[in-house]
Length: 96
Length: 96
Image (cartoon, rainbow over all chains, first blue to last red; front, top):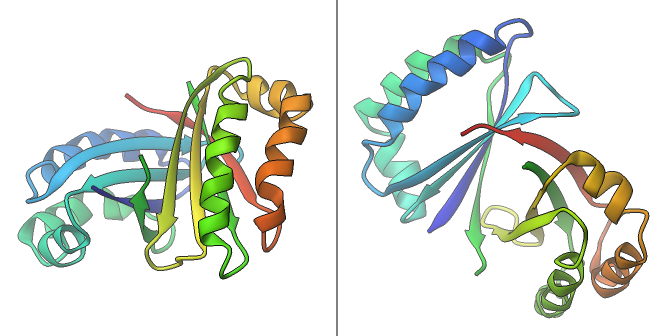
């Protein structure tokens, strides 16, 4: 498994709506090939910022499979309206 | 549980030594009050950068309990020599 981290700043005041939309979005990404798990975190020091940690079988499952799929369009349609700026996305190998 | 993230840039070339030292460091932090879990990640886009995700019972268990303890001195002595610059640390509430 590799881990994707996405840091998302939402428009201040839209946190409750974003969190509700995220419930829909989680159901969408969960259908993607190679998806394993999603963990959602909200910043304590930065309460308008969320960190999504998404586990994928391979890097390609995320950057090619999911991002180039119709599911990604649905995912972005659900949560994109609350983004204050483009998310910062990186990928990580996990140690046991 | 709250999650601490620590982004650590290590001196290029010291990755293997850092990873070995981290095995020692994990045994140290695991003794801290309120410690729950540690996950270690290495950057794919930034291979000199590690993300430690450490679960604590409460924020205070980390920022007061651990950081002000002798265990923290031991932790830093183990892995600090490999830091290229000060780690970037934040805290997150976890959603279920």
